Structures are given as C-alpha cells and as structure tokens.
View 1 (cartoon, rainbow, N blue to C red):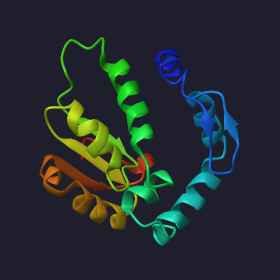
View 2 (tube, rainbow, N blue to C red):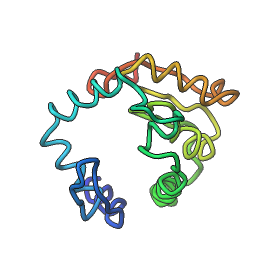
View 3 (cartoon, rainbow, N blue to C red):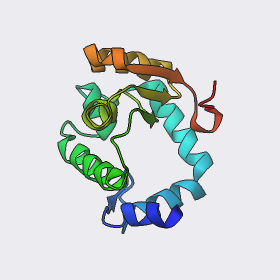
Length: 153
C-alpha cells in the first residue's frame, strides 16, 4: 500500500508556505509527520483566526484566489488511484475538509453517493455547508481531528 501511495504522488512537487521545496508529495508528508505537533499548533491558530484577510473562502483554503490548478491535480491523482477499481466509488471521505473545496471540485463529481467531510473546526464546517450550497444535501459534516475520528461512530 505504501508503495502505491508513493507512486501516486511521485510526480507532484512544489513548495510549502515557508518556501521549502519538495521533490514529491511523499517528502512533504514525511516532513509534516516529523513536525506533527508544530504543524497542528500553527494550523489550530489559523483555523481559529480564519481567512487571513482573503476575500473568498476558496482563497483562504488554497492560499490564493485561483484553485483550479490544484483541483485539476487532485482530480488527476484520484482518477489514477481508482482506475483499477471494478466500479466507481460510491462514497468519499474528505479529512481536513475545511470549506469543502475539494469535496465540491473533486469528490462529489467522482462518487455517486455521499461525501463525509471531517474537520476540526466547527467554523469551517458551517462555512462548508454554505459553500457547497445545494450539494450540501449529499454531505455529512463531522467535527473531529483526524487522530480522533472514528468512522464507525
């Protein structure tokens, strides 16, 4: 499984908010895992404060007001991940869902059933219900941190 995940993110590279370059998605995840406590502390502060002065919810989530390229990469990655599946997935899980940008742009079009949005912030889940508009009826909103989330509840 780990090899498959590494292969899926092998051609995705870029820089984080601090300008640190990553040759692939796996390296980014590795560094985030090593700095987990700091990562959560910084992100909890950001979630409480909100949009960082951005004009739109979508802009706040991606860091600028043009997320189409990011969504295209996500759609491509998801398509590659499910191409060997015998049928289209019925449901999806968006962990760290924020405003629901990935749910709306990637997951809802890819599944025939519901999307479960999990986020630590009640504020962002409320914003997601608004952002998703009529698509919110296909979604379940769950307030939880990833490490506390239990899908069987």
